[in-house]
Length: 191
Image 1 (cartoon, rainbow, N blue to C red):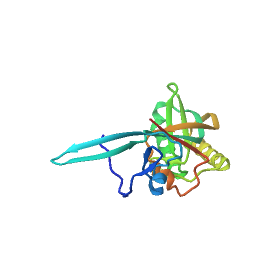
Image 2 (cartoon, rainbow, N blue to C red):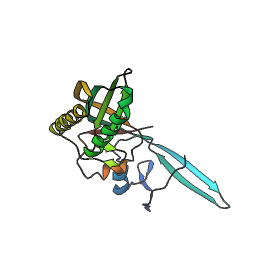
Image 3 (cartoon, one colour):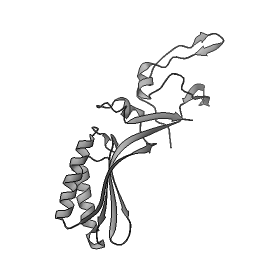
């Protein structure tokens, strides 16, 4: 995969600090990449000759890893194979209507399916509004009513929490989030 340059460019000057040379990272870039004091990085010297020699410094931060605490709503449902398409359609509708961040399916045996709805703040579409436990309970009641009305038998229902790890999130998505998401997310750069 090829590197993509950020649209924001800064000019600066190298300064001396003791026996070292120092470069200042502008606050806009430190916020965009969620940098913290004391964070480790790797710095590479890079150069090319086309036809004149050009040089640069690449500061490699590593992989951006986010751990998200999400609320889950899990159902174990008795669903004959011929009804599986109907169940998937219902779950997609519920997921979209109640802004679930993800919906997972697992076939337990020929007549049982486990469906888990995730209610986090990170989703493929961007940042979602955090949901309270009461909102998740309302979703559970509504979904249980709908499933029973469609002829499905609920074998088990559980509301819980779990930690999900993301490795494909741009830090700018979090730094510009329209909601306060820091209580649900922990992030770090891994070299």
